Image (cartoon, rainbow over all chains, first blue to last red; front, side):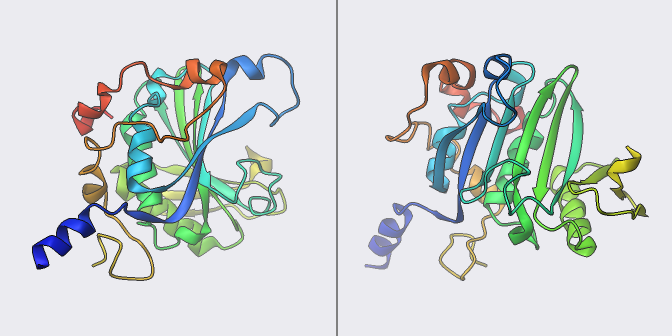
Length: 194
Length: 57
């Protein structure tokens, strides 16, 4: 009987703590000189482990996306725009890779987010990969950049998950902070000085 | 630990646990629908990526 129960349990979808939405901003749409942000489209929302893999396994890796493409994974209730009230006071951690070398880190970033591996996961809005000339940039957007300890915790854990050893930078969205501090290998950057 | 999502209020899943599903779930969700122009830029023609080594992701 216990084996039967286990089998049934294993057939149940594995619910995630949050529902997440993939968004895509295609280079072709952006080239039509539409207002910034209007070319970003939601792709699909998922709330189980199984749905995530069904999507991920059929969507291009960052290395296969076209130049200037942006691909987002954000919590369902948050739009990947700084104008979203939840993002408005936030910031972002960013890691840059040579073009075509970000695929594994992108996957591991997604798995860490949807698997709730961050101690301060509630402070995370989502992640984006930006395909640019010569570089693939991955960023994690956060909600409240003023909470320094939380930002540093997220940055340090992200580096651990990716086994990334170089310094990474944090940029505040709202340019109301005059602080510039260095904490070991994570750096808080005043955008007015960048 | 609540690796299977049933042991706590927060559904935490380790990377290794999540990766065990990668080869089982290769079909797009039934309700998946996006405009053709986006699909051409975003959707892989081959779903056999799911069988690739995780190190290649």
